[in-house]
Every structure is written in C-alpha cells, then in structure tokens.
Length: 197
Image (tube, rainbow, N blue to C red):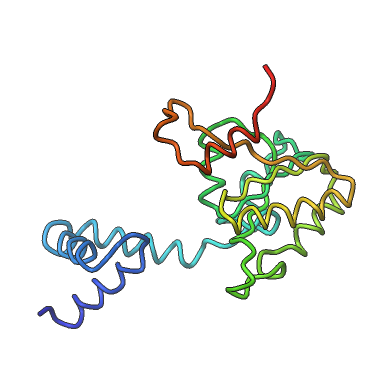
C-alpha cells in the first residue's frame, strides 16, 4: 500500500510501547502530511539523544554526563539509597518531590525463567556501593509484581546481612480510592501493611 520508506517509518514507530500498527500509521502520516518540521526536529533530537545519552556510572539511570545530576548533587542525602527497576520509576519519584536521597536503577527485575539473574540487574555494582559508601538505609521500591517482590526480598536479605537497615515502600489503597473498586491483592497488602495511628 505504501512505499518502502513510509513502511519503514511505520515499522520504526511500532517500537514505542503501546504503539500498534494503526497508531504507528497515524503518527507517520501526521508527521509526513502535516508536520514536516516536527518530523525533522524529532529525527534530530533522537539522533542527538542516541549519541549523547548514557548510563550514570553510579546509579545507572539515563544521563548526558558520566554522573547524573542527582548523583552529583551535594545536597542529596547520600546515606539513603532507593533501589528501583527503571529510570521511569526514578523520574516518577523525583516528580513527587518527596525523596532527597540517592538511587540505584536495576534496569529490570529477577526472572530466572527469562534468564535474568543477579548479574543482569547489576547486583555486583549495588553490593559494591553498599560496601564502599556510608549508606544507613536501603529503600526497596521495586514494582509490586511477583518478580518485583522476589527481587526486593533478594536484595533486602543481602543488604541486611551487611548491617544496613532495609525498608520497603508502602503499598495499598491509593489516595482517593474507593474500597469497592480496589482489587483483592491490593486490599490484602493494605491490611498486612497497616500501621497504628
């Protein structure tokens, strides 16, 4: 239906999460029909990002320098380290403005079925940081999936054996949530994680 160049563009757009064939087609046609300047800007920005964005040497998030702005910020509390799965999780926490410590990004979670073990999530680098830096508390903020929970448990045991206090982010009923619409697993976690007032 389309030529090979348009087809290649549509295929390339499908690499984005949640973008299927129809959405990719709409995006490609929008850029080509109505916003050629936007298409050029997008292509240039992607090329620049691909060339200059790397992993922070300390926390492994995406950064334009060898050390990201958070790791190099002297006002951050270096005694508290939050472990999470993805850079997107880190950006979400930063947007909340509620955390002033440092991070370690696993870039995934343990999944033996998929061949993802401790080496693939940077466990050696995390343990090295825990040994070399003066970290008093490790906050585990992995996702609340079976794999995320297993990963948190594995890391928590390793940190506790080094004498580091380990905590897990709270989870349960969301603020403004109505109990009748909350799933059973979330309610169970909420009851098990309850605290006294």
